[in-house]
Length: 331
Ligand SMILES: [Zn+2]
Image 1 (cartoon, rainbow, N blue to C red):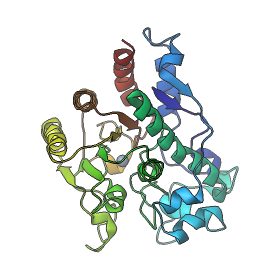
Image 2: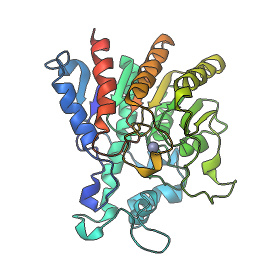
Image 3: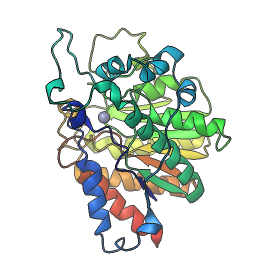
């Protein structure tokens, strides 16, 4: 199944934000699927179109500190977003942000964010029930307990896991993070927690962006399995990912796998900070199919998230995977 809600978007242009995470990733992917010969006309079998869920302060408190969580619901919301989306440079100038072009103040993004975060939990419930769900959203893996950065105010996978564990819907989870950037928030949030095993395959350098972070900073927390890929090592990517997933399987069990199927390791991704990892379209296609088949063989339900992807063509990456997996599941 796909879970898609066109209102569960952060709508950057409305807030004057110029980060090249475009709605077209989702809208163009959906258009392509609706016109796919094996999917067209069968939407009720593969699409859940819209949801009403949101995320409450109580949900946040299972993951975040009280002070950080409460700030999204009061006057500090603007500051939360400025920091997480990296909108202000150290010298006070604006970065990818033009408030003069905004139709709404930044603080009004909170309800959109809470809805988008809730979609991940909703998609987790669908995955547990039906075996597979791809949410058109989520993957905000740089969200930490008491701060956000890297365009991630909160960590949707962590919020979903803690809520589903609280509801008794699951116990153990694997997170397989294939975004170009390391899932630093996820690693820190689940460090030392045996119920959640984290695997991150990512650029060996280039994240965190600020190389001056002290070694004690939570962004340097290791995942259970880290697979750093250096520039020029792209040919080893699939083999090393496969070996990492086998390590997961040999050393732990899970009720659900959450996959961050980031489009940003693609060689044509538009965000400059992803240029240290350049997979071809064929390599990403193989990455996604291999991961899907691995989880299918392991008999695990899987929840897939879009995670990072920048520029006008990143919809092609999601379309490539979904137009393969959905007909396969429909049979
Ligand atoms: Zn990324």
